[in-house]
Image (cartoon, rainbow, N blue to C red):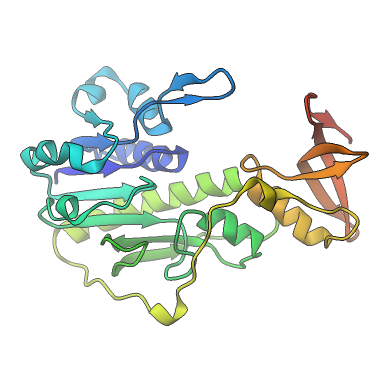
Length: 277
């Protein structure tokens, strides 16, 4: 089985590392170009590229790394590679039909929600914000619409308890779960042993990108549970904040005890984080 892996952020890096660890070595890895990061605008490789760079020399030599601004830039290289299928995990671009038509078996999309619920770019954050009792991941046949294709496999995260897990931890857990499902599903998919099933469009919901203003909380008026969910879902980005004594105060960590919100770690603008207890 020869495949290309598409992905850019940490979620994709975790998936890729586990695939490689299980012996599913991609022929090609596609991620976004290096970008300036932070206040000093230091040009930094995306997590997927960094993951490849940290592999053994033997592994690196077997992988072709491509970083196009647009997928069509590498169309010829992908055609020459003659991959059987693609795997796309958080690539952050919709692949055009000219790319999707290249692999012999099609393209497997990875989405960390129980589709058709929570389509779009922020399923993990949205699930935390909405207090979903169940979270999971879905493998589906990628098409040109957003998280729309027929489902190949789907599984829920075992022992998940809502309102207890922050975004970064849950992201890594769902990435690991996605990799496990891929490892189990890819051989059956390649052998044509799976009949994809259509998503129920009447059950589809969609997520949105979060702006800085979505992280604002009013500690006097907002429900403590709602504030706590924001702290869990929106840290580190776009962050959660309130105004205190005319100053902007980030809320980095908190807890609910006896029905009341208690702030653990805060950071005033221009200051270092401060642990309150």
